[in-house]
Image 1 (cartoon, rainbow, N blue to C red):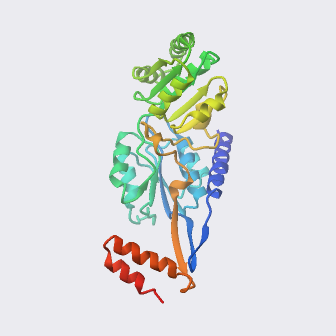
Image 2 (spheres, one colour):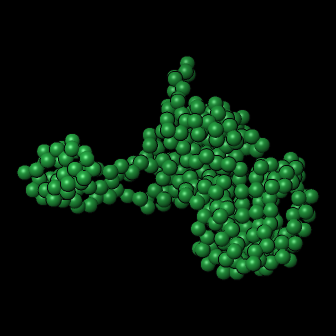
Image 3 (cartoon, rainbow, N blue to C red):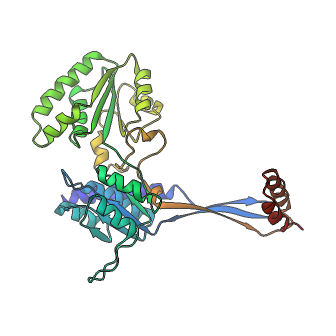
Length: 351
């Protein structure tokens, strides 16, 4: 178990550090001076890891390791009734403070902080709070949003598989069940161009669900009630439907899978080919498993170091003579907008 945690930690850390290295400070010339942006982490990050039906140490690693890679000075973790494996994940992820509290109470504790206790431990007010949770966690995150930043308002988990007649029915069914066992409100969606493949996958679902232990089986069967399959006339229709749904997890199990995947525009995480199981993403291939749900992949992406970074701009004028074209433009634009005070502030910089 320790080796698995360490390996997952290392892969997530490598990926997150590569993301951090992809964005750098910038400086460009402007009339008479320089302008640019700086990239810096927020000071305190709050990470939430669910602890309801099952312990989720992977969520500890996905959130806390990413915050550390961004450069946050303090990383606070909140999770109810932590199992030993959850506490081990927090240790490996180098969490500073572990709050053994969940739900809205955990979110509010991280958002507003907790004064120093008799033990001398003070929980700072976190600048950003991230991580998945139930509807109470999501409601609390929506309430503190603005007081601090949040990653997203996550809904029920979902997977969508696009497949054709080359798909392995046993593998596809296993992937659908893997998502369905998360929660009774999870969704497993199948889009296929081949009716026989859909029939084969349905048969595999029946067989594999029957052998699933409890409570996983009951959970997955309930989730299947709002799951569905669609027979598509071709791959283009499947891609179009997938983009409309914008699933949290999108698997491509077709001929030329990478080409099909590159045509998909809206999703949280993309898993290309039969062997790129979504569960490998859950357990630390590298990319983060905290992903947008409920169609929000149309305008946002998953948790990353960027959730903990601030990109702030600056400008400097060193040459007053060289800046005059910019000053004149500002005077003209200010008066076009009816802002005389702005125009006069710019005029104060004229030669």
